[in-house]
Length: 270
Ligand code: 2NE
Image (tube, rainbow, N blue to C red; front, side, top):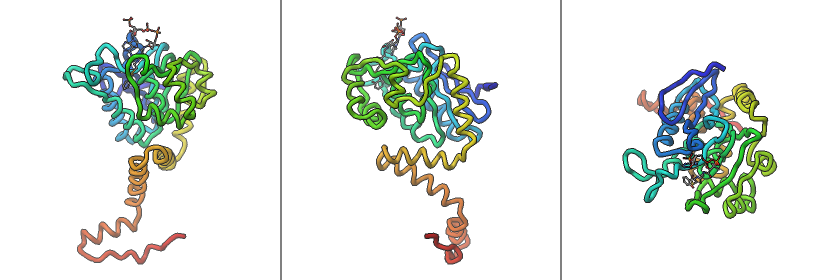
């Protein structure tokens, strides 16, 4: 694929090619740990992807072969959050997690090396995960004085079962790619040198499918786990479809033309 850079950032790389967007955390010197600026850039890129009609699938990865992401950059962890250039302590990765969940396009985590701590939760909130055979997964929170009791706990329990999720958090062990596959934490494991090719193949297969069908399925899976917020997304998509019907347009047109709407011409399906 001929990747074209979409925008310039300092901590990430955002590219696209043939309907696929690729977002790369580019801080390999700290195993792709994120600081507030890294997260702000990812939020900016994912918001751009949301509006970009040419993109149907996102590949999300880390630079190099050693890590997808090692979580929050502990060097800038301050009192009450991670502190960036504006001196405000933040946990803005939680906003990014929601953005990935709400994005009406599948996001595939492409994991080479470590997906650890907050970096593990980032792969977890993606729709699918393709792991290289050198991938290592785990949470570290209780070891380094942190925890993610949001998606990091509830979605993990949904994904691997509650006993396994508790083990992952209480013991802070690391798990191999094969172990992750066995517990349903990832979708596939491939040799490291085939990771990119395999991820692009998965993305291409998704791109052949109906975008609206995929979008509704993603929102349905969210609705099942996200409560009212998940239902809101699914309902929003239903409204989007409804706006495309003649019946909805009749309501709007009647208002603008200052007449009573005539919905009698639209039948009722069983
Ligand atoms: C990722 C892991 C297992 C890699 O181990 P290894 O042996 O391959 O590399 P090494 O030597 O540990 O790391 C290489 C360099 O990257 C830095 C290291 O300090 C080291 O720097 P130098 O000694 O070369 O100067 N580095 C790695 N991860 C970093 C990090 N997260 N922040 C800052 N520097 C980092 C191993 O490095 C590891 O266990 N890393 C820490 C993982 C971790 O505990 N992450 C934070 C979890 S909490 C969190 O992410 C979070 C949350 O719980 C809730 C909300 C938001 C965030």
